[in-house]
Length: 492
Image (cartoon, rainbow, N blue to C red; front, side, top):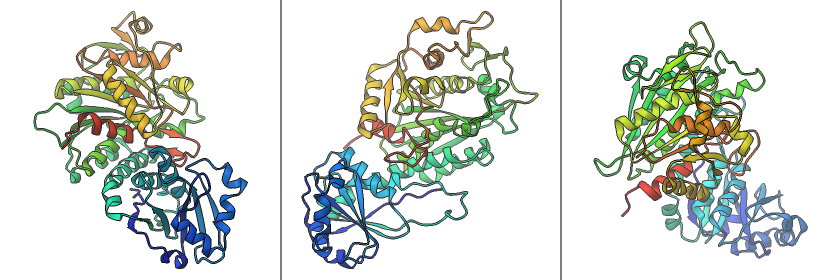
């Protein structure tokens, strides 16, 4: 598994700047003012830093962005990275600046002269998140370590305390990214379950339910999705019990389709290789559970993931099949490529029946329609409860993870009407993401606060971001962790 680069904190030592042989990082305010460390670097470099701070190139940088001065005269450093950043910059800007450092990390050590920068923990988190790289299958890069990072601050003990949770959050995000990045021939349903069982070492209670147990529970909709695959379907239940004994947990439910061919309703060949990421919802749930355990969260949270593979063979479910859900409702399968909702409907019902949760949040790379609606900037948010939804949206804004509320309503139910069963699994092209959510809403009890997150557009992206390279993003780990900390966690 990928390990994040977690900086060390030391007291500011200006004398160390001259002899440091790696990469130096200095802060220059948006108006061009140099702090104490930057002034020392400027003197050593014979005014090069001040000249750059007055240049058009510096002026064009946004706050939180960086530029590089390679092999500056008068210094042993191979480069000076100049962050355009004020000492009292907002947290999101500081995190973005950390991302700029992380993007430039190489095998050489890095020394960051941060002084008394506020939100130094955000700098460390942004650095760790952006330095991620999935290199397990690249012979030349696999196992190659990045250089150590040291952040010089005026009060290192306070900085360490402020950044205490950074490693836990980064580990959670990296766990999700690694899972989403793995190829389907490696991350089978059995291997996925095995990796989740590894959370036991952190204090998470983990159960793996096999097909016989799922059949006994009546999860025939979930089982129908995987019946054409050689990989057996599984449900993994993860419990973190860090809150008050007996207090109802928050339930996180994740779609874990380890590969999605579309089944008999097979997808086009172009782009199908990306369907290794169709377990992104389960990946996010796993990452949140790991982060909670690592930081010893004072909350009760249960994570449930349905691990299946949607393949076409002689046993695969067909368009026109009718399956019975754990709830007892019947579903006419119109399109076998609308399989995620069949997995989630049984998981949602099971979560409520077994745990009577304080709230349920499900995550799934569920529809292409949400990408048409929101692109790759926002996840679709559907909810039956304004208080829970608003709390999540607030957490997502604070973490910089795009999320946009979408509608639900009884009017959409008529699109799911079946002549042969209680409902169809698709409602046609109009409002495709909404009818998928409306389908799931039928499996949520009236008294249960619920959010459905359609993350099809944000779980994996094909361009570099400020806090993640192209590929798996780990979207949702930070927002859900913050929601739990703000809303469900015991404080004091």
